[in-house]
Length: 499
Image (tube, rainbow, N blue to C red):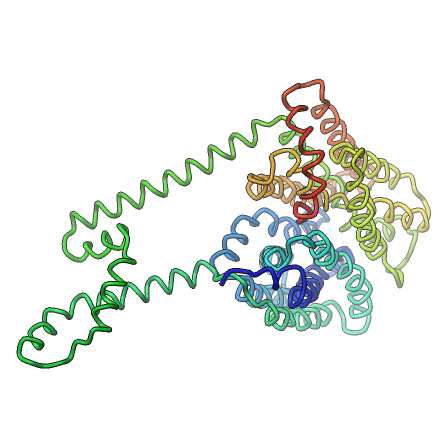
């Protein structure tokens, strides 16, 4: 089923946008506000901050690192089955976490199971939205991706109230039950294109039908010679059509039954094709990483994720450790940061549309400002100051929406998918390492000061590397390649703003 122009940019597409928005809200609400649960886990299990921080880091990083696998699942099975399965994973992981006896079990149930479920939801919602929109794709994706920030804002307050009313275990059970609504959201995701898995099933069904018809003609021919009319012209036409549809691979698989030698040759051909595909993929990845600007951007995203993600997990514990507040406030710091991130995504998206603004330097500036906010956290001795810094850091953390835009500017649309996957791997790796490193710093020094100085320094170093290695003086060819993109990205920026 090919998408028609009547379907794109409207109609049922807006139902897809609403369903995808709600899916990201339900899936990412608890992981994005995990900072509210972190102090409760510290008190319940009495483990070190570094060990407990692995829960929050894995739930955010596993989905990004596994993004190529999640995208392959969506391509093969479609957005609707993947979203249904992810609903089972997210809800099951949250409910299972309510019965966790120790942090190690929580790392598996909450960190890995819920993290993989979130990665599947992210890939499915973005894929189905891109299928339904063309000219308004940027607007649609912008609405869908704000679901994570809105979910974090709502869930931070909701989980705080549920913990007071029902305890930590009851909170996780209720949040897990709410996450089952992901399967309801999947019901709206009507596919435009037939997924690869169904195409393979259809081909296998046709192949089996052909084998049955192909094996019976000798007996039928005998019946025809004796005067029986069991074979019809329609059957002979079906045989001809199926024979035309069979390609060399199908013939090779059929001959597997007739001889082991031919079967071995067919297997060797399949292996050679797979090796060629993998070698081509690795060569393309090698060419992408040969670009100096792309390498600098990967390093910058890694360092920003390493330094800027820990406050999402630790900021509430920082306020309680410093004695600035006894309990989590009605509007937690995590909620303030989440709503500021939502505003930052929209504002930075508007700024990057301006022709005279360089998107790479804009990203470097957001890193510089976010690093300053991190360096100011240790010297802030009031809760109001932490609220302001949370808002500032959250606003500049909205630069995550610029990643695919900048990737398109560097490598072009043809290699966007592969290059963005590489970039997400670096970002997920940084998110996984950041919170445990900060937790280990606290376990070592019994203070968050050195940890946040380290985080801020990492972000500032990333901004400096990105700015320095993307200066036009490094290569004239690189500057010339970017000139046409200034006019081109004004049309494809909305397409590129996937994250």
